[in-house]
Length: 355
Ligand code: COI
Image (cartoon, rainbow, N blue to C red; front, top):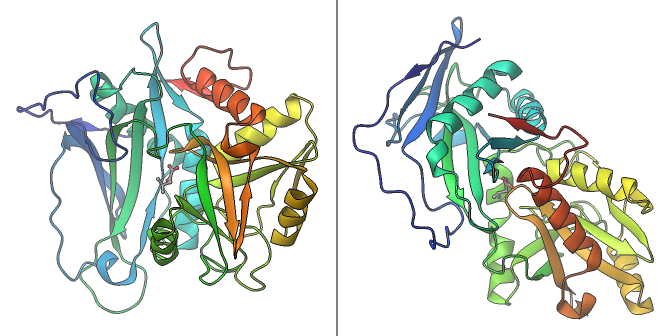
């Protein structure tokens, strides 16, 4: 159990107004959690302090070799005033998997959870309650050794910041248009594609810019070797409903094992829908589209929740899905997952925990 020191701000900020659209990731709460790591000493000095800039040496290793991990999860306020976290155990487990892959020391799971609960409790008043909003929790670790040689750092900072957010995409629950990328790649097996680390996101930016210029919100990645098999969207995992069956790419080492992905698979199975986790080629999707059996496409993610896809673009082929509208399963998944997160629907899976 951590002995967390709490230092409250003497200059609290004004909370966002009830009609603030809470543009994703732009507003930060009054406090943050910080903990240091030193080789030989371990994780130490856990504290909640006022949200503030951090001071690092320009030689800090994170700036040069990108040794950094992050996570994303959310807290929700129920109608009866409780604060709920959605499956934090899964994020914590994945955080330590990322840590192992990029040589960052692990954080004991119970300490990680205690840190999240503590900072969320301190800034509980910041949890928004308007429809479609939540408090986004961003834990991250950075390598801080002042050193330019390539090796894992001996010192780290673990920080958790909080941000009241609305929908990730400006479209909200309205369907997004997705560009299937066949030039750049995001990750390859054996690389770091399944780790939640900044490098995967910077690898995606060039293609994302290209997609934006063409009027598409996001990029759907194909595998790095054959440019043939569907991987993920970058900020989301991807699902297709083809002729009644829900299919999603299997966890192959180069895509992120999403928490929402896992929840969606469980729900679809319980609803009696046939589900498959397997390799899916872009040719199969194109063929399904041409046969008229590409029934629904949606993305899943913590930030995006469920994001219906209204159009796919692959090379010169434009594939509208659901006539650009929201599919029945996408809507049901959105309603069920947000219903559980907000404590409005029965949580049969024990996915939520109270702060
Ligand atoms: C999340 O869904 O929490 C993520 O980390 C995706 C991020 C790119 C916003």
